[in-house]
Length: 228
Image (tube, rainbow, N blue to C red; front, side, top):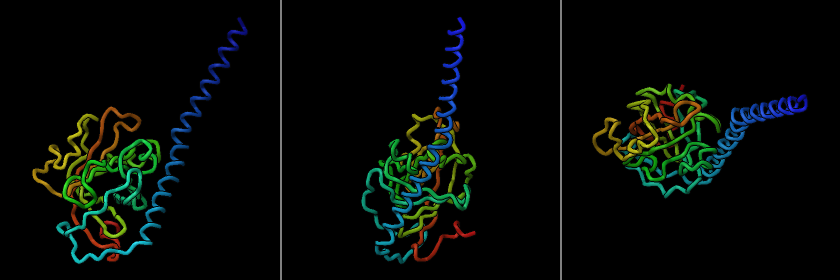
């Protein structure tokens, strides 16, 4: 009997230790690896941009005529996102597609939505928790907040119009070219950000929608939204 009790006790201790290690892995190690992966993706972009010729931009503002970029490569970074509301040091790489492997390295662009700055809905997803917690503070976003992106040649400043809006994962209309629940009624240059809700679950989604407010060439310096 004592042997049985001792064996059960040892098993409980072992299981408890494994649970603690797993929690530590989820809370800490995936974050460390993701931070390193995101930093690497940003370094890749900066290195790529340093070798390219900046295309001339003669107009600015949301109505500027923007050259359509080349198709994005699956799983590869193509832009960096900044959201001042989440901190002036907050910046994340944006990669093409929303595969699990992609979201471990940054934010993911829904491949069937518009490209950055183009007419349509530029939609991006990010983890709320784990893998660097990029959107952990998503509920802090408010209408009027700036979401700024750069592709190495142009700054794109979007302004949030609605959200955070809570919905279910099957509500795929949130990334339509003109999302019905966003309040938009005609085609435009829109932005959608999505993440999971609650923090440690995935039963729902949080959504914010915005519109392209202005653009400017990188050689003109940082946009006003990023100046302290």
